[in-house]
Length: 354
Image 1 (cartoon, one colour):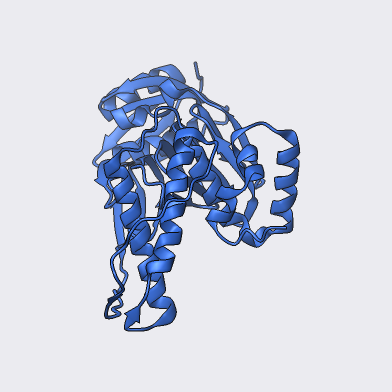
Image 2 (cartoon, rainbow, N blue to C red):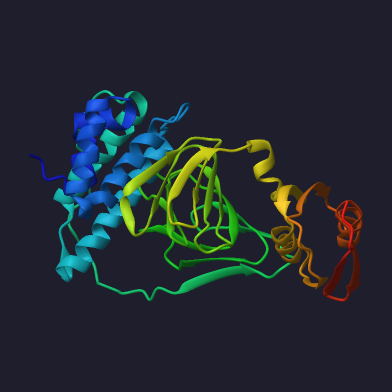
């Protein structure tokens, strides 16, 4: 049986391709069992699967500039790996570059036809000597306080719309040998395509992997993370349990429940990402959760003087509205008075609720 020690082993395997790109039940049974028997190789399997799914996306064309960029990144990663492994001033990379160049061509052909593999060799420069240098990696942190949203351009060309009271962090070499990013709060990601380096978001207990797509992650509540796919394809799994993967299509989401189980379901694409446009939407939202959202949205703190025992659920849509307008509407509908004092909102629920 094959050892499957690297991505190339998976991409050359006909059984693996049939499992990823078709609904063959026999292949699914085999690869499900294989993942259980080889838990240490799950990550590389997920990377190979993500590459095939991305290259199978409708309308993908691999033009000459994209091919050249892919070859360049693969060669650079190989050279970097060789330097750190052998710790030598004189490094020979010809054989590895030829091997990985053939693999890169294979990926491009899979993206065009998903039917055949061809090995093509390219001439490479002669052996070169280089001096080993170690660059210090530093963490880059982007964050927003309550009441503020921002759009961030990442080094790889991807875009992040960062919600209020949220933070992302990544290392200074992001986009070179990796595209790993850590999220607290909520962000919408538009990922720049790069089939040589997967884009990975770590949010709470979940890990989301993509190559070129757009999706939203909400991790405000610990143990209640939510991933929603807007376009493309992504893979989601629990960091502590990588053998259970969820593959999403546009309009599908996964949510980590309070009991640590993961559920997959559909959602409304037209309503899910309204927060990016400054639209505040409540649909049968518990009043306690609605207050948390308002605090985050407007950068204020609520003080509830009279606790209301009823299970009030709030509904309403507010577009670029002042806080006073929102409170006026909700107070009338759900029976409370309010006062705004600087950054504090004092709420008093009435005895009789409508």
